[in-house]
Image (tube, rainbow, N blue to C red):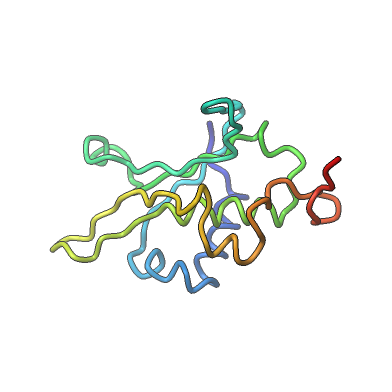
Length: 140
């Protein structure tokens, strides 16, 4: 696993430009963007990426609040738009609790295995798009 400048740049652009990430920007959340050469599956489903909270147990030695891992073998052929949507999805998992004396963090669960903002903008099947044309793949 290694740090990914490519994913950091995409995510930072999303955080800067999309109002849905205003809290991430305001709280100055520290996120590491990592690239893994391993495939990941869970319950026989391909995992493209995941967002993880750095627990209090490890915060003393880790300078980040969260880390997002993209599993490279699972995103082969993704277009730039699909990678942007993938990182947008993972950023939606970044939860910030401003109600404590000190800002707290948590993982936001899925709305419906996706987030409504993404469904509204690009549909539920965005990851099945034809990378060459940025259109949904034709079934059958």
